[in-house]
Image 1: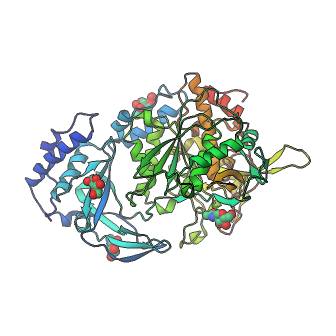
Image 2: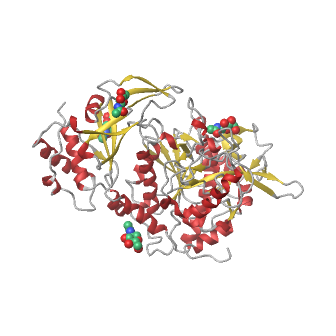
Image 3: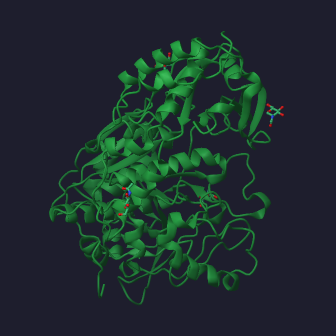
Length: 614
Ligand SMILES: *[C@@H]1O[C@H](CO)[C@@H](O)[C@H](O)[C@H]1NC(C)=O
Ligand SMILES: *[C@@H]1O[C@H](CO)[C@@H](O)[C@H](O)[C@H]1NC(C)=O
Ligand SMILES: *[C@@H]1O[C@H](CO)[C@@H](O)[C@H](O)[C@H]1NC(C)=O
Ligand SMILES: *[C@@H]1O[C@H](CO)[C@@H](O)[C@H](O)[C@H]1NC(C)=O
């Protein structure tokens, strides 16, 4: 093991930098070789010159320290480099999604985004000199080169980061991962390295599945009319009736991407039997495409079907019929990879033609599990997708104000509400759930209430209101009312945080096929899938008129509150409270309310022009 070396002045290296816009792998490798030569020229000890970079003060709840990791264990380290112009990316994101801006709808290419997200040349050289000096070489995992990946041993990593990697055991699953409570980087790399992973982030799968409460109702379909629409059964026909969604897409165009995390497989047979029964108007479903990320599979053995994956596919392909749909199976080939980041890395390697125009991810995790540098980097990745024209849609989780349940972890630390991520990221659209009740004296009429499971609240990590100005007037009205509605909630939520959900759709007693059986499921997952379908259908209408896809949605949604049915009853209980109440206008249970398709599509076709008399 070589001594760690100080970075030499990279003036000779700078001359070898690839021309702007050329950040490919080949130039990178050439650069690495040059850096090594430069570094060897001036060796100097650096251990004293380290700066503590990230730390947590104790082992996270749900994990125990099982002792130091073996020195020769291989670690697959990822280094997030500081991007040369992240502010520029965010500005470009705002420009292309702001009505009236000359760049509105002129989405950026992979290469154009990389102009902002690529690390500065001196960042690349400084970090490579440091790694080469330790005998390591890294390769970029994105086109822009802002993420590096390298294999090293625990003993080398311990020296490199002035830390002691240990084995931590998940007390519920027994799964072990190698992590640390703190690490340092050379002082002169502060400002070049954003963070190193895996270090202080303690969730090996990177997310928790939304609580789609699957309630098997019948061994066969006897009790399930194909067009059922009541408090016990919501079919695709019912979704069409409730939200006014057309049965078909006259000119299918654009595309939907569906994320599958944690060995969730989308089963063809379940999708086909679902379509045959609930969509007799559609002769047979289209085939969906599959993309494997981090070794993801899509096993078609019906006993391996995933509830979440089946639900997500059935309520995208079963609603936005004919819109090309891709299932992204994010595997665990490397169990340390953060699933959300792995999918972003895939998109950050691929040109826009490989991007879906709507991306559905019906998974959520507690925001507090994520170190802020990691959640911000992931969130910025969604701004990158938005700048490229993708509508990024997340479910808000099914735990009400208490957020996702984490085995072995206190539900509401200090009695505070638990925000969920990525729903709390300002650059995504977050979808909550409603439930219906039929009105017996008016057959075919329904009351829609907030579903009690509907995740909703305020972020603790995303608090810069300039990043979510599109929601401020809607949210401020609720905040003004909040002390009167809920006099005891002060301190349980952060009134300065990004508020969610943005919108909602029905998400209770949703009919689905799973492992060859008919059943119903509850969850904001279904709501997010339904909303993704509605946006995909409006995109198809826009594309038929040669208009760009809607891209980032939130400015459009908050500018058109009349396109939503306001939900004013119900709440999302949790943490020994009734949760937030649904009320007139936006609320942190149902957002703006549920879409009224013909109004939302009229507004969508007129966007960005101001719409009168909506
Ligand atoms: C965003 O728009 C402003 C105003 O038109 C312009 O000055 C700026 O250069 C644009 N920024 C980017 C990154 O495109
Ligand atoms: C790290 O090692 C794995 C397994 O040997 C290999 O598949 C991978 O390509 C290596 N990664 C790098 C960046 O060298
Ligand atoms: C880093 O973590 C170790 C335990 O692994 C602890 O002993 C040490 O005090 C921590 N250092 C800092 C600066 O937090
Ligand atoms: C999931 O739903 C079940 C049944 O409604 C409920 O008991 C459980 O608390 C829910 N879990 C979460 C995380 O909300």
